[in-house]
Image 1 (tube, rainbow, N blue to C red):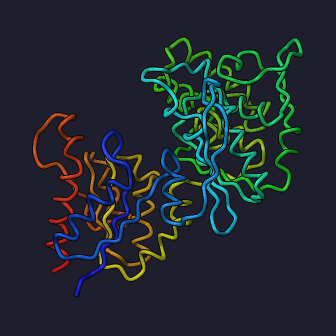
Image 2 (cartoon, rainbow, N blue to C red; image 1 turned 90 degrees about the vertical axis):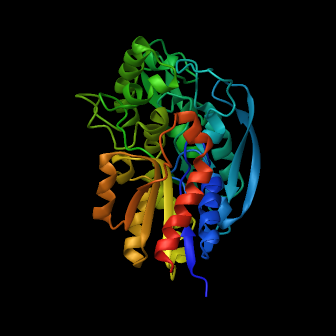
Length: 375
């Protein structure tokens, strides 16, 4: 009699997406005589819309819009069977539309996210989930707000279109036109980070360099986000940024802009656990395997793997966590209820080889775990 094993990983960044990771785990389970159930997950960043629709189905709307640099681009809106619309910021103003090395946080704008949000509302959605993360922008969401109709003015009363460079010039923000366009719509924001909008742990200082900001740009952007916060009503604009709403710094400040529109912010991994009905899939399983590229302190802070471990602990299902790299902080997952936390590494090798062999390593490790636990 075969036993059911849930394969519920996140992506291994730079190597495998979540679906490919689940398939690699499933191959090991199958070889060991188990019955794998592939259930890829995400944390609210890249791939989140596709992950939810892989589990739930529904339909996809193609929406003409613009990329982070204002060029024509097709965004997507997912519609689930319960009427919920799901939008992924990374699919609208993320890296996929940009050329290799094309990074300019002063030029980049979040305006392109407005098209899929408005399309969802026009399609009749009364609840819109926006997944943040993976954007090329650092504009505090001013591009999105302006594209939704908000009036953003400089000191001379001139209207700004929003964008990283405009942050230095924003003096007033009237959100009422944008709020009116989304009247009657429940906005839910799923974030993969809880960074404040500005300050030492804020968007510009933590994520700006990843998006192409040099030290001078980081200072300029952080100062602009600091002054933007009270205009959006998400912080006093004083101190080191810890008074800004938690998660306001997500996606270069898009979190703050959506909070200012009345959105509810929730942890992305937990919401995807709910939307994909993971707890229902988990019921009655003999084992759950989960994985990500690097298991560290941030894993325990609310990433996908933490959500899987929590669900398994609640359901009484053994959970084995696999990682390409484990730091000492990975041990924290034992306190959460993980059965084992293991590296998939098969021996010393360089990074390129490790990324290339990740699928085979996952399969081999899943096989070994199942040989021990399923017999």
